[in-house]
Image 1 (cartoon, rainbow, N blue to C red):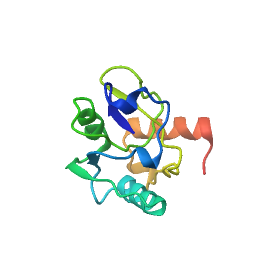
Image 2 (image 1 turned 90 degrees about the vertical axis):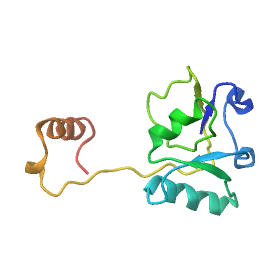
Image 3 (image 1 turned 60 degrees about the vertical axis):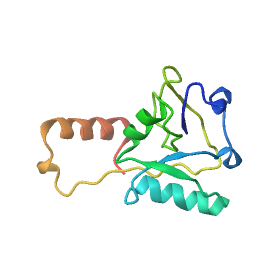
Length: 126
């Protein structure tokens, strides 16, 4: 979860569903991240109050910085614990499934094809 650096939760090393009180920044209803999160919270019996909605995860994180709310967002490599936002793990939530698909490799532009080749080289094809 992304919280403002001076939020009382920011000093903790992790949070639990019981800590999820107060206003939350919600992701778009049609996003897979939101659907996955809502399903996981329903299983845990948690209902998050929300006053603010955004179009994407990055905007949710930006709004958490000035204290517009807390944002439950996917954990990403390289998320810094410095600056106006702190990221706290919520271990009870299952990780988001990620992946990608392409209909025709020839339709990818050169940078996208280079990226796909690099991922395949480092992690193998699925």
